[in-house]
Length: 353
Image (tube, rainbow, N blue to C red; front, side, top):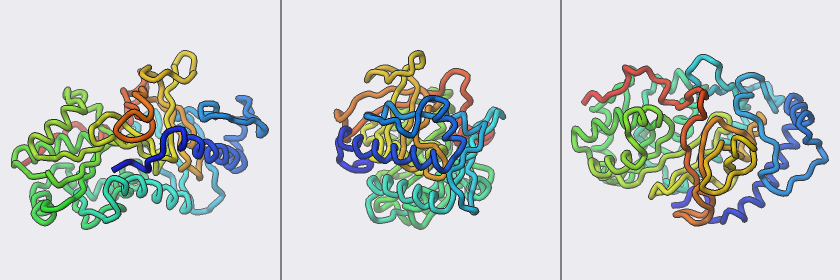
């Protein structure tokens, strides 16, 4: 299945550009601090844009330093990022309407993978972690994925250790047909994979969605390809999709294709790779800093952001799915690690069969 539709990159770009221009006007009117930034960098209300690369971006770090809110609703929640170095976290405003808008966008993207029928869902996390971190990107991501699943079972206990009995009971009930597994990458590897390998669990009917946590796997010398290969050889798991997203653009995820030939943008989002010396758009195949664009953010001006991640575009309309395919290469030097599962204490890793 495709991540959002069969639209080619040029077709989706035309639609997305109009939506992003509308969002610039919306946030300019609703967020005085954002309006001052636009004025300071020479983007007046009269300015016209012919392509997405001309749109004004904000550095993602700005959300750690300033409250940027584009809603007057009284009921505003604050979501936080998963920074780990103590230098601060992003604080993202989210009102009820914006939360529902983002939920629908995330569900639409995931349903292109899972199909219209909600599948039984095994969550490689603990219920206590989700309760305690509902306002964090970790909790929000788990809750978002739960919307496309049913009969949810958590695979970890309160100590972040694998609950072998819970996993095996879930598989006894659901492994005969399609089911869904979701977790942060390092937890899926250090907890679920170790149990599945030790007990020869059959995951051949599973669809695995995972995200974040690659820093710890890189420290263990586990590449994305090895992750896929070893899961397939040990458990029969063949449907495996990594995805890339961030709290500053909630509801927007860029999903890896079945073969792993790249991450793909949904129709309402895009990425641009920028040369860190000139800030011009980098050529296909040339690494640079990732800029993310999304029509999802409405309660805060997070629609065009320069991240602190390095990436590379591999191709456009030449891969397994239509659209732009890219890879995330890692964090910029001196940028703090932000992976959701990378915030766990070291002692929480390792399965206990």
